[in-house]
Length: 229
Image 1 (tube, rainbow, N blue to C red):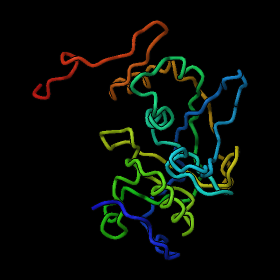
Image 2: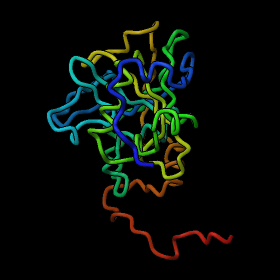
Image 3: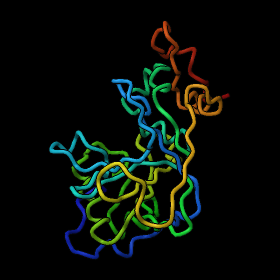
Image 4: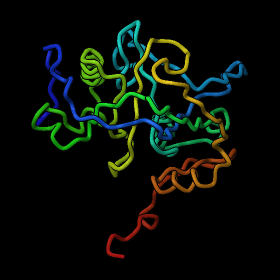
């Protein structure tokens, strides 16, 4: 079954399966140091749909609304933020970014659970919604969920071949600000380039962080684990 377009009928997604998100920890990677050396302390940014859908995020919404992308694990947040750099990741790209560890409030809104088993037959949702390349289609689904009252989406992450990591996308008004629904969303910031556990997790995904002077990583047959062992 191919992923189709969402129903245009208002309320058609209102009873979609829900994933509780209150009192949890989510993670977001953001660019802390801009190219002009400006420091950006806030991890929050709700992105609205650009003129060219392919240039926008998977679930970006039309103005005045926007989407902010987080993940349930730090490595998932890195995969979300550095998609185009995963096969050749210089350490400098980690040094100019920070990891936000965010505590969701006890009254955080539930998210539409895109990974629910019944979503396929009942709503026509497939993994292509978070793993496909048709941004205009995934953005249309995001708009339909927001239309029907949802303030968050819970689903897979495109650059996770294992299908085990989860993303948590928030909806709110477009611009740089913390979420306005629920109580406060406190966060702490930490560096990425010296996070030992994170670097080990990236290696499990075949991602090798290059230090200055290192050649880009290439895979040789001898580097591939024997599936029989």
